[in-house]
Amino acid sequence: MKRTSYRLGIMGGTFNPIHHGHLVAAEIIRDEFKLQEVLFVPSGKPPHKENDEIVSPEHRWMMTVLATASNEYFSASAIEIERGGESYTKDTLLELKKIYGEKTKMHFITGGDAIAEISTWHRTEDLPKLAKFIAASRPGYILDWEKIDAHFRKATSLIEIPALAISSTEIRRRIREGKTIKYLVPEVVEKYIYKNRLYQSR
Ligand code: NAP
Image (cartoon, rainbow, N blue to C red; front, side, top):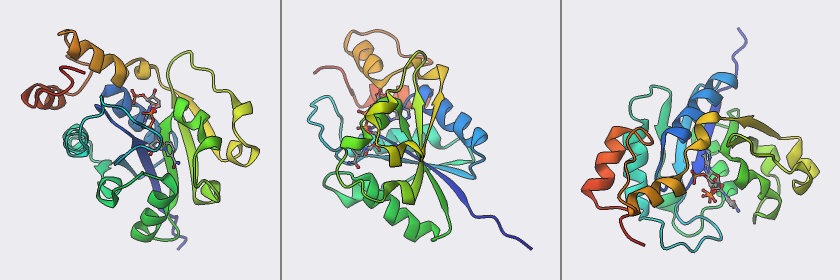
């Protein structure tokens, strides 16, 4: 009997906070790419990011766990948070390959804007050999393929997700301005944000 290899999606992001756009993107991509699991991996310290608006890794981890709990195909991993230091995707993929097995087909999913910068990321040698890359883009976003090196281009797919009209930046702004975020994030995440007074000031 021929056994097919495990198809794993790895949803990488800062998730500051996680929102329904991320969840819809992961679910649509799971379905389209026939993934057996989508593992959400919040970054520890996102590379090249100095941003006082980023709440602690522990808060982003808790919100990710709460948001993904109700989907049987979703799971969450704290490997980048536990590793500490800058979160390099290459280290994450190598670690996950050890955990899930050599034959696992890995699909790294993240935002189109992040993928557009992939050729400028550090430690990217061999990345396309380790995983396929899926760029989830906001409506109307045009990926500048010219910016992406040829060896990455072959390993990259672009998928437009209308729900990604929702953005973490907009959610943080709305909270600061005292506006509602109902239906932009799962209700458990909304409650967690208010209970812990996240994003209320800069
Ligand atoms: P970001 O700058 O926070 O986000 C860039 C854009 O992509 C934003 O519009 C963001 O929207 C969107 N986005 C982020 N994650 C997404 C997801 N999973 N699905 C859909 N849209 C998403 O990007 P980042 O979080 O720092 O980086 C994204 C991923 O790439 C992370 O896993 C990071 O570790 C990795 N990365 C690796 C390297 C490296 O290895 N050298 C360098 C850079 C990034 P929202 O704000 O609404 O999420």
